[in-house]
Length: 432
Image (cartoon, rainbow, N blue to C red; front, side, top):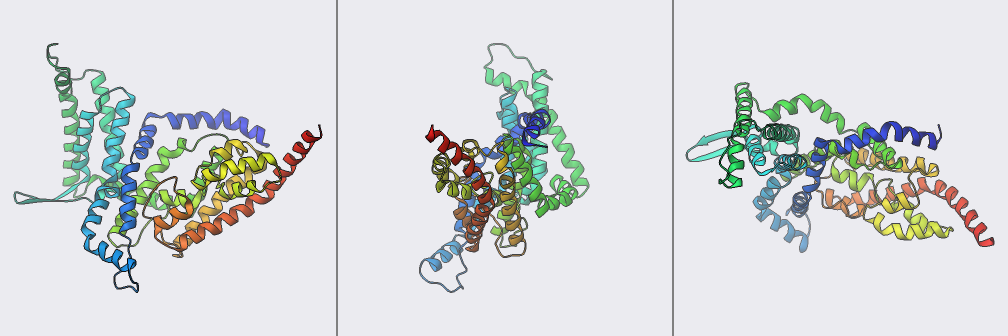
């Protein structure tokens, strides 16, 4: 099967599915909620990096020891920042999903968000002591471990609330002279009461069963989560994303599915790091951004360096225009300018480079040669810098440099084939 027939098949069978996934209201709300979380995850990532000072007992002088002592004397502050940023990711995702679902249905989101937060706290947070002199609760499942129940609560809340409001279910009518804001509150009393009864019933069932909703879900799906954090899953997802990109389908179509896995694992790792425990997960958002797609999808940073020294004027121009964006993990100028999309010459390296990167990075982290990631600073941070700050391991940038060289070696023969054809075309035009 040639590239043209594959492209026709993709447009006929895969493109409609990708469009449905990208436009499906719940997946779109999940995607937008995770994207909106960037200021909070950025702050949590900065705090995690700052708190990763060497031990004061370690050999060192000056700045190193001052940094370590500063972290030690402010450990509670850093722990609290972590608990309220990456450690509370599920709560913010719950709020975001409700907001975007209501927004897409043109329903005011404030009241359903209040109801959703109440349901979240009732079902995700486990009360330990509720005395008059003080209250204690277990907050462990507010991080990435609570993402799935948080998405369940948010979708249930938004869908049921919007369904009842649009059908005026239990609406209490007030005179026209009553302010619109007050009328809206009264119209929400019955839908709100229905949702509260559902939350209370679920909590009562879980309480009598001696468990909580996140514990029940987490224990049930833990084998699937383990399988999702594996080298095989990394390879499959990397191939799928890049096949989509090759045929012009943006990976945003898959982000509604991938974001909960990547960001959930990141939140769990951040909590483990703050607690001084071993990091359990490898497949996180910074792992994907800094280690798998070096230079953006297609791992094009190495290719842009090759293009800058091309004998072809066209390729050299594209390389010079694309190398700076690629350094900041933006690959679109090269994907669409070279182009890599639907270009049969580059089909194999476009898929292969990121698969090699992901496999090598995963295995080196799995055996302990490179530290696992626990902080996400920015999608546009260069991989060689982001790899260090996301792991605080000096060997991580060295791995990135090695992978860039490997990516260049993979791209090189295909680049030379493409360059040869373009040089011939350009020399022919000059002769004319």
